[in-house]
Figure 1 (tube, rainbow, N blue to C red):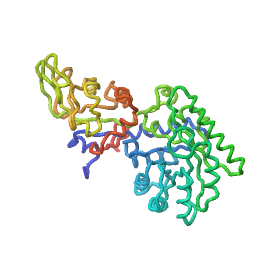
Figure 2: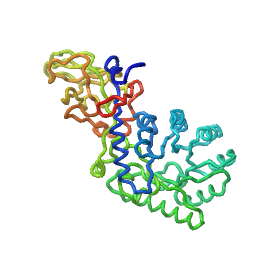
Figure 3: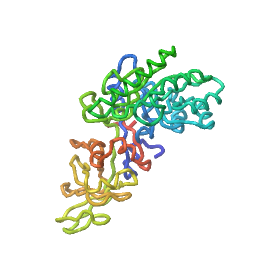
Figure 4: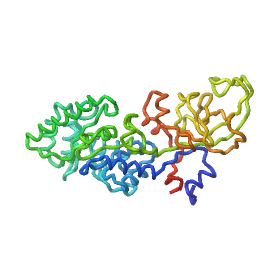
Length: 385
């Protein structure tokens, strides 16, 4: 699509694509910032290619509208941001251990998470000058970090090692998206106990952070110096009970083209294994998107798509590159018309949460699942960027 705007390229050649609305993203950052205490900074979590939205695009927009930190899962994700010219502080949320990883962190000015004494020793022995590091304590996630009972000992150990500058102490909430907040409150109390112990040892407190999107929306008592916001940044709610807390706009839409229209007689099987059989003559559209693009096959015969603002049933097994839709309600449908799988189309709205509910999963998995053979098209409202 060299020499063309993204929208022009789509109009001429694309079978299916993902649209990323930067106005919606900017709105979400501003709305989230308004929820924060004045002293609390916002980290935009852009791991997994910005939850499928495009890490560099999301990072730039988030930083332009109030985020001051970026979070990634891997060193490679951090390098991608640096190569794009982004100079904001970047926290690597995953564990890193090898000398090669340390060399790369230093070279690209990334900030690592340390979660064990052994890892801290490896970093300290290699480094020749101070490096900002972030210490993870496990308060109940049972993932990275020493158990909270050993947290103060770990922090005290790291504070005595040369070349390690403790930039923050943090933990991660396991159940912040639940209506029942009792375990989240317990995790909060555990972190507070760790902090009291290190203060008793005259170790100065660095930056502190605990809240993910759900924890941030749960209340200012969880905000500390920094919040790590992922899902909410992209306009998705960690749970339906948060919808009245803040007004978010979905950033992603998924669209594809009709490639054939045909009429089927009654008793016709549709797609592999004939999981759908027509009860009467119907008109169907073949749509150029499938499970290789990120539409889960297990959604077959369970979702609706939108065409000309009308919700229409998807029928038959979703195949690798195509799916079928009953378009009997649409007169004079033409090849090339655009179908909305996720997003707004007229008065119709199809959400990632709706797909997730059908599959018994979470919206994170849905938006992260759209593959890169679907181009990401950046728009600002209804205008191309």
